[in-house]
Image (cartoon, rainbow, N blue to C red; front, side, top):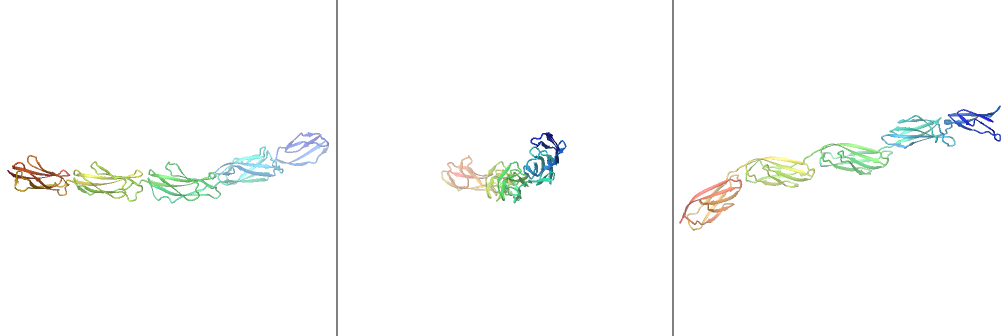
Length: 422
């Protein structure tokens, strides 16, 4: 029988009988260091041998992380250190110490498992070197912090207005150590969502039309193949710019007389003009449609008074601009009438008369001329003065009345008494 003795472990069995002069046992190390193992049988002792146990047996330490990279914004990875002996076999139950040059570890030490691996976690936002040490043997691994692409927003429209396209230049760039850009998007900050631009590699243009005034933050983002996202932002102040309409109206006019007016939209509007209307202040309006230049027209007021003329212009975004002007309409002097009567007037003999109608000073145009006899017989009816021929069928005295009316309703009258010879 041979008895085995040693440190940092135990023997299975502790005593063994010789077979052919040789006794065998299995030594299992339970600590770390160099264990001296001896054997004796009676008074005979064997020469001690030294066996490296645990960390002392470590010959190589390798380190890796899962995953091997972290986002630019930071993250947590699992650090795995594998401990191997000189023959390349894994060493279980071996203590490992960990150190890092950035970030923080969940623990500074770990014990290897049955596969010889020890694990801790690392949280960092920078490229970090991890070192694992076992009894003077060490291994290193560098966790790479991925770099996101950069984005530059430039050459935006100097002023921003409702309904007017805002144009910007977007330039994404791959950062040093970064991966190719996969997608570029723009969010205009008005709840319209992200506008995809695509996988551009250089300067590209982006445009948007705001529908309401306000302060907006436009954000451009570039995402690379590693899902790293770089952004840039710019703030816009979007104003409501109303279209302009020029209205030309004289200060005064005369009832019944056409008044010359004009409207003119802007020569270069921010948006296309879709319509122009004019309200004359007397309950009437006129629509001119999508005019592009100065447009003249006339308006005839039926009665005197003060009126406010208002022109309204509408553009493609629905915005409206207005311009107003006042005009005072007066009643001009009434028209005058005269009748030239030939002499003598003889019953049953045709006679030629001349009726003259003259508008009043500043008055309205003549609308009707009527010549009647005392009994209401109409000798002449027309729109202007003229010569006419009439044959009297009776004789005696009668009065001829000439009545002239203008378009404003003013009336002028002339009477002359005549004798008709039998």
